[in-house]
View 1 (cartoon, rainbow, N blue to C red):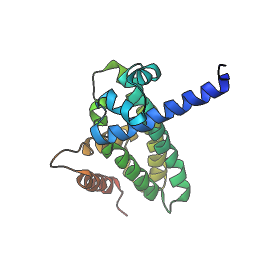
View 2 (view 1 turned 120 degrees about the vertical axis):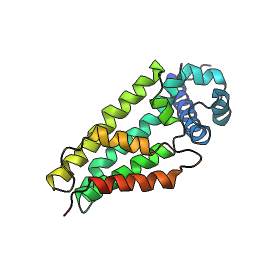
View 3 (view 1 turned 90 degrees about the horizontal axis):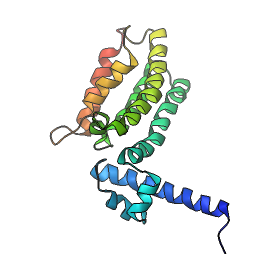
Length: 189
């Protein structure tokens, strides 16, 4: 007797969620170019299941990071409401953005890739995160806490460049350099 449609749909959603969780973990360990078979093994599914849900690597990478991007964007208004000042909110948001960037091995390379399938990831980040950052910068400017003329896109690009880690430049180095960048953006009292 065939399973009801609702049961199959729920199972498909669980499988998809399991693949995304496995891919996120494997990407942290190995980067976004990790073999699909490693993701399948971690998820307990076959490689075909992954390709059925995510026909291209770009589709998988984008799906994995979409939730994290949305979470980072949602943090901006929350921090603005809860923080003592707009600059404190901006600093907290930038800290979260830095953490997102430095823990995603290969994300920077994926964003800079010529792979047309990854253009949607770059667009997703720009369309979602730049407005969040702009909201914080606008609040800082209104409170006279940052120098005028700092654009969200330029600030985020500078942060992104500072977060490209390597053998002689690790997470703590990136965090320190981004803090220095932010201090330079702050308007003298």
